[in-house]
Length: 291
Image (cartoon, rainbow, N blue to C red; front, side, top):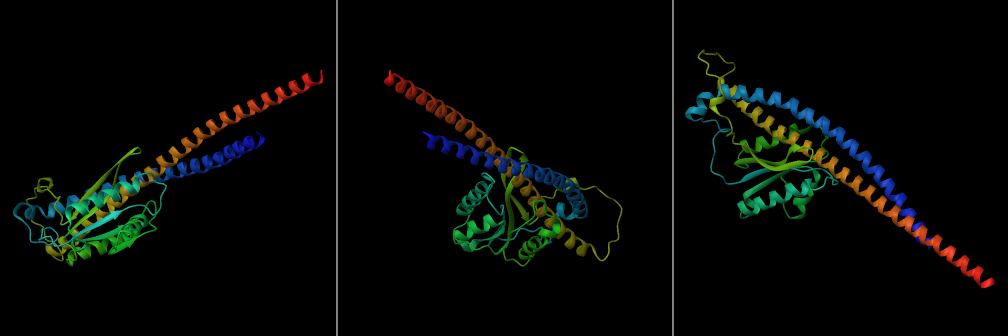
């Protein structure tokens, strides 16, 4: 019985330590989530301004049709997918949700591996695809919890450049969209060609502007910047969802640990009570034998 009591005490102590660790990780994730939400909110101001300028300059093309390669849908020979996951686990179902959705989409839309390319942001996604014989064409891991544009500029610029060079004919970003701390949604968003601009959003300027170096050069730069900012916005959104998932996973782990401690404490008290009862019984039996 003593051995059983010691085992339960050891389990209680071990579970308390685990609870302290997961509780600390929950607080860290909560702080990261607050920063992510603020960064995403601040970026939306910039993104809306870029969209506004781009739509204003493209108003005529959006109405009549454009010859800009960033806006034209060409025959689809190959698709590109930027898949955003975390670098590690302990995120609940965060990675499983997006990876399952991407695999189902690929199996449904493509007959062979020659019809698509994967660009992986996050070590979990890169390892997942390699384990299934799918080699990412480009990958990035070790990304900060609240990445700046400089942190992801290389992979974003590379993705846009590959589209321009016709390595693939359309580009999607696949990620978990942050709804709130408790929920997220798998989102597959088309980035290229740019098709989400609406001429009705443009201001109807009647004045004629002189543009330097040229209107075409400015549009070429601006459309690239718009596409890159949209991809960056998706990365920020995914990171916010990741931090929320980490916080909830650690909160759940902490709650489970506290529940386990309560159950173990009840077991310990019952075992201790049984041991005391047995000792009293033995003492009484011994006293009776001496009479």
